[in-house]
Image (cartoon, rainbow, N blue to C red; front, top):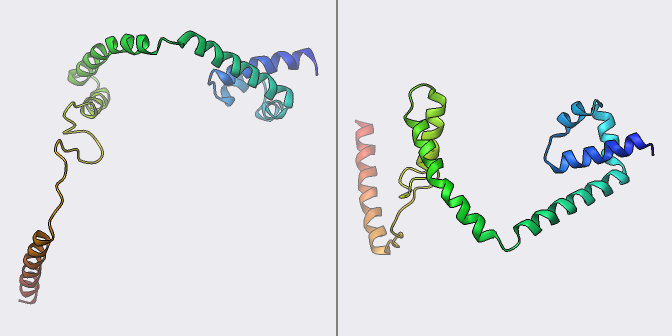
Length: 154
């Protein structure tokens, strides 16, 4: 393997671990998709990518070790600022697309969940329906059905 290919493998592994898409990597390294695919299939490349990935992950783990609560507290400080930015984007009058997007985001974060997307959310738990109530509803539904059929005939 030539030194140039070794350098390309190192660059390629770091870019892929960083999350850069393959088509962008190929353009940056001035190579074709086929050439990129051939390098990705090499065992040497796979070894380098695994080493880069494990090194990156272990460095992140070491940096975050025991600091999860501190990071959560730090992020909590940004929540009011982010919500304020959403409200400002929602109330501005220039960009309709940004307003609609911000409005949707705000509704999804509604503390009472009244207007959130998805299934209807209720604060109280659903109560089971008794069989007596179901029987009474069935009788009334049959009466309504008969009345509707009479109206259709006339």
